[in-house]
Image 1 (tube, rainbow, N blue to C red):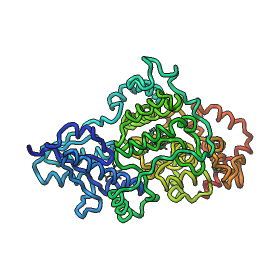
Image 2 (image 1 turned 45 degrees about the horizontal axis):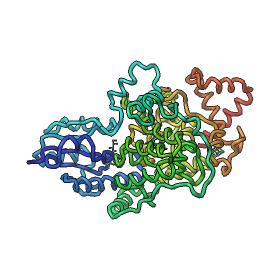
Image 3 (image 1 turned 45 degrees about the vertical axis):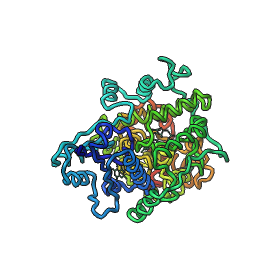
Image 4 (image 1 turned 90 degrees about the vertical axis):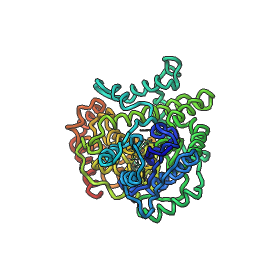
Length: 508
Ligand code: FAD
Ligand code: DLZ
Ligand code: SF4
């Protein structure tokens, strides 16, 4: 039988059950995988992310070969690398004999558009299949969203609980409550026995990739080594087991906590594996659910974790695909300041920012509250242009893909969508960071000082943000109390905040 199907597998589609692979069979198809400059360079990607994606792609290609597939694999440094995925497809089509190109829908509008366009000049049709690695299809999310005045994750999450049966007793949620978040806001203390994600030793394939990334993209952001991510499904499954055993029991309690020198706390550090397809979201949730029924982890931890995946993760994807055109161009608050250089160097005297950016440079990882309430909060308070903030997040995290990164940044963190995704801006002064972390004790700024020399910059920036955006935000019921507090301040106090913020921003 001749091989008439050309299947393109993208760098974040490394799943054996991928719809494009399922639609045909090894004896009928040739699989194409390609490391290309267009994908490596659309943002200034962290070197660890590049190495992670390329090494995982190379390992997956080997697994496919073992399973009987014929795989054409293009390395980034190959002399005749065509530079883009579409051109690689076109070049392979020229060798003749193919009747169709098959692919699973890409996670990003940019990539799907590129194939639509390129496909017009191919001699055979392009068939794009739905991505079956999510719980909710585009149609399902759209019909859930249709006709609702306001979209809120919590209601969508309940639908997903019912659909999957996760933590359900018939129609009733386990423990009689859908959401145990109120129990999940404890600050953490340093603990010598804090678990760490398992460290995978680079094998020969990873070693070759590390050398190539250093040679070909050595000028990119971040530290390439030590490199410890798993790059195969087996290693990712071990990381899941390790998390379920070690960190999960305290995941809920300390989900919002931040500690100097503890980049991972009790987080799973699994998003990079789930997002490229090494782990299935539902298998991750089932493993975590088992920990609850075996009495190993409490309900607040298990429910909180499952909500992040079947709630937030699916909701973010749904929001992105409702309206992907121009999504990253949104700028509801009209913020137009450039991203400060220290986001790329970590060279700042704000201890919280230095910690979050420093570990991002080192690990291509920061946990949710660091992303939302430190680097994201600062960018929004300082009025940084959301598109630049989006490009930074897309570049620096090993788990970053536009379908999940953009709604988190543009929608949740920067309020650049005007409140379509979340009900209020995640804006906070230094007080919040002080409550949830130990950063302020080691900072040159004083968190209790409101204005003037040595005052925590988040304090003045917070009030300046509210004052600056009063016409757009004052009507938000969740900000009513803050605007009432602002209105009660004397003119002198208000002026002191605004002058302090202006002086800080001037120096930025
Ligand atoms: P854990 O804290 O252990 O959470 C468990 C899992 O839940 C994660 O692995 C992830 O799959 C899922 N999850 C949790 N929160 C979210 C969320 N808000 N949206 C989607 N999934 C979620 N997540 C990404 O996967 N890619 C991104 O590019 C990304 N960018 C972000 C940018 C900003 C500004 C913010 C505020 C959040 C972003 N997130 C992103 C969401 C979240 O911060 C990360 O998923 C999480 O920090 C990954 O670390 P973890 O695997 O240890 O997660
Ligand atoms: C992230 C990434 C990188 C860095 N490089 C490649 C690549 O060379 N080849 C490839 O097929 N995919 C890569 N990816 C993942 C794609 O960027 C991803 O498939 C799209 O952004 C859609 O989510
Ligand atoms: Fe951050 Fe302000 Fe605390 Fe310093 S004092 S760590 S700048 S919140």
